[in-house]
Image (tube, rainbow, N blue to C red; front, side, top):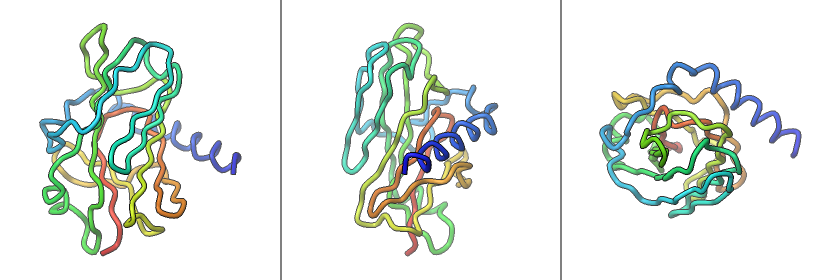
Length: 170
C-alpha cells in the first residue's frame, strides 16, 4: 500500500509539471460556476491542517504554502456541471479551491506541496472518474489516476488551476 501511494504521489507531481503552464495562472473559480464557499480555513504558516465538509476531506501538509493562506472550498450548481458531463455519467461532486495568500492577497495557482483531497459518498464506485473542469465548463480527464477505496475517492492536488467534478456511471 505504501509503494502504491508513493507511485500515486509521484505520478501526481509529474502531472503538475505536465500542466505547468496552467498552474501558474491563478483563477477565481467563483466566476466559472463554483459560486459558493462551502468551507474555509485560515492555514497558519508551516502548519498542517484538515478541512471537512459534506463527504469532502482535505489534508493540507505542513509547508504547503509560502505564507499564511485562506483556503476555501467552492461548489456550484450540480445541474450546470451535469449539462457538460459525458453521456452515461452522473456528476456526484463539483468543487474548486480558492487559496488566497494573506501576505500578498493573490490567489494561488500552485502549492509547494500537494494537498490530499478525498470524497466519500454512496455513489463513489470503481467507475467514478475525476475530471478537470476548464473555465469554459468543458471536462478534461485528469492526468493522474485517482485511488478509489470502497466508497472513497482520493486524489492529491498540487494546485488550483482548474475546478473539478467527480462522476459515476448512471
